[in-house]
Image (spheres, rainbow, N blue to C red):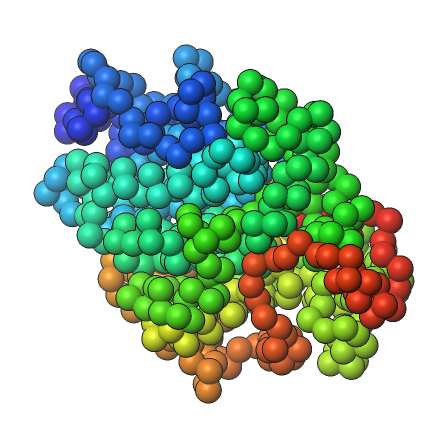
Length: 533
């Protein structure tokens, strides 16, 4: 490439010609449509193949994310000239574009509680991963909230997951032109992105689209069809409508998103019907509908659904600390509130007593944090590795224990801390919040370790520590010093070992009565959890 054309990179894919950019030796293509805009007659439908275009399509700007309200913060502004309806787009970073390269491919699925987020966030810039690991990095937008995950009569379930599959099909059919090998695709994601990956592992529609997967902090929230129906009815009732395509097709997406947010803000008032998930602010999750998503991930993996897929899965030690800090509640968790949350979320009928006995030196705030971290992320991630092993597959388990120096060190190894470390984007955006504006040298060292393991795994190499098995239970601990040890959270593992992780049910009046009689404290007036899954 000469100096004259170093600022642009053109290539052709089946739908037409693209014009990307060369940025620091990496070819970057943004905002490439992988499906038709899901608006108008295609609203709430499964994604449709993208239509071809004439001429050269500029790929210099990110596409718009799915419409979303500001419950979890603002999304990046759109560049001038970007079609606001073109939600379903991918972005590609390649160190060596062209069919001859055949580089491994890493496809990132972002988190955000299945209701927020954008592949255009600076934290998800794929430049350092592509450059240091010799991989092609792909990020994508998918439908969120009501558009992507609400149960709507007349529409397929899990439209957001179907979008992700459509993006993976686009990778299969197009990535060779960008220098990628469609036979070496690894999906990786965090929080709701990891939950999506866990679902993809057991979906027939996703079979053959990737051979390796990395799931970072898998949330334990998958809805039964009955629960999803009830939540959707509550959301649309606020608009005087029913959750049907007929009622909702004429309602602008930017009106539907706030309706979901209003319910998210008062979930605890529905604990008698919605159970554990009512103690979060997440009214959307993948729905185990028996068709698009045939089963909960743990059951599907234990039955061998993904035995041929190599898996890395893990969590951070202090997952929930971030949410307590963001709510301004550090140092303010009372005994009463802790007891309420322990009994609402814990694995048994008297979880407050069980946790107190298992962690005798823990105060009320730490017990609150432990049960929130365990139910939401730590135990679902552990159990995914266990299920993969039970199904005859290989699942490598890890834990991040390195403590963030941000905010005077109060965050510990909190939720999402792994994201800037994995991408190597240690300044700006999420990194400024979670690591601080002056990241220490050890952050760069740990980031280099993550990137080497993740990209090496995508290239076909073993991650460097044994697959999880129920006897040795070896895990990789990423901390100040990296080590392979027996699972560090053994106390929590034993507390949860008999809990059947599965899709969350809609409670009956009898279910609610049983829960009420077993709880030590009355239900909290406000939701004790505020999560960005």
